[in-house]
Image (tube, rainbow, N blue to C red):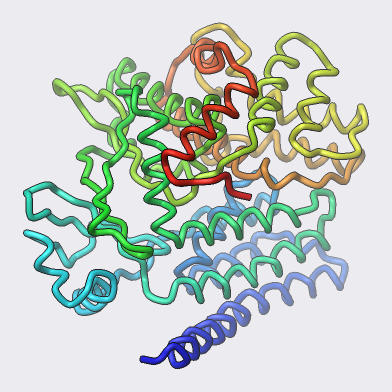
Amino acid sequence: MSERDSEANRFSARAARYARVGANVGGVAARIAGTRLFGMDGRNASNAEALAKALGGLKGPIMKVAQLVATIPDVVPPEYAAELQKLQSQAPPMGAAFVKRRMMAELGANWRERFAEFDLKPAAAASLGQVHRATSREGATLACKLQYPDMESAVEADLSQLEILFALHRRMDPIIDTTEIAKEIGARVREELDYQREAKHIALYQEMLGETPEVRVPSLEASLSTKRLLTMRWLEGDGILTHKQDPQGARDRISTAMFKAWWRPFSHHGVIHGDPHLGNYTVFSEGGEAAGINLLDYGCIRIFPPSFVGGVVDLYRGLREGDDARVVHAYETWGFKGLTKDLVDTLNIWARFIYEPLLEDRVRRIAEGVSPAEYGRKQAFQVHQALKQKGPVTVPREFVFMDRAAIGLGGVFLHLDAELNFHRLFEAEIEGFSVEKVSADQASALARAGLVASG
């Protein structure tokens, strides 16, 4: 096929995707706008269900985007978030014939000879690709993450419709400006399509967590990887939720490993795993007991300026010491603008909720009396109501995945009913902290992984 024909096919696929997504999303948007026009709220369960149904019929990237939006507190109304969270990101898996064609496209006509075994039935299927279990010629068990065809066209089509949803929300409820949030989501989802970048993320995490035995990072099989095929060593483990009934000590060990897997890269290198989905982790055991976690997916990784990390530590110390000036400085470092005392007080509602477990020097649960799905929703509502009086506010784009990941991590702790001294765990991670040290350590780790900071 010529380059011109290939480009024409990509354009045709994108145009078809625009039509399907646009019709579904646009129809619901018109319905919601119509109810608003006639004096009704538009934010009701019927409209929320219609939107979820429209998106659920599309599968693919729009599902990932919708679920992602639903897990960022107060980006969409609560009833919409509740419906979107019900969506399954499971896409229909590629059949055996399709898998063979995709593998041939990535590794060549003799691709099968490069494996001792290759299971054509996927071990897992998600919104952008599926994972196959295989065995190397040397006998090692492998995980082959194979991207669905024409995902770039699908992602661009779906992201173009995301702005419809955000624009509609801004018209209905302009208290929180979602412009920067949309930019951040687009940048991260596009990065997830590049498996060569994800391979570098794996190298980065091996560098950052190499001395953290509670967290295992898979090794890459570079000779069996391309931009759309990522082959790693298979890490044996069980799903996190299978350990909900384990003894308290085992659940606390898993939770401690999760805490370190998230906070250690951030506090030392300014890097977070932005997709704390339960399916991205498994639990490994030693001596018949849960010992730590396997970190499986490295598509949604966010690299922050070291100054942003400094803002996180400044806010923690400002809240702990009652230093209002340091709190304001932290928000300004993150990029919040036009801060008044009332606006700072409103932002502190959210900050105190996130930081409360870190501020108290005692063994405790992450929160009491809430389910993982409800975690953070009450506080987000309180902030929203206060902003109606004190706002509006534009959320800096760097804040988006930091916020989302913190909520996701808290949800894991709730699932496991962990009882930890979060304060001491956090203090251990920021011991000897300085922005200059983070800057130096980040630059070194990124260089060794072949990466530069993302925008």
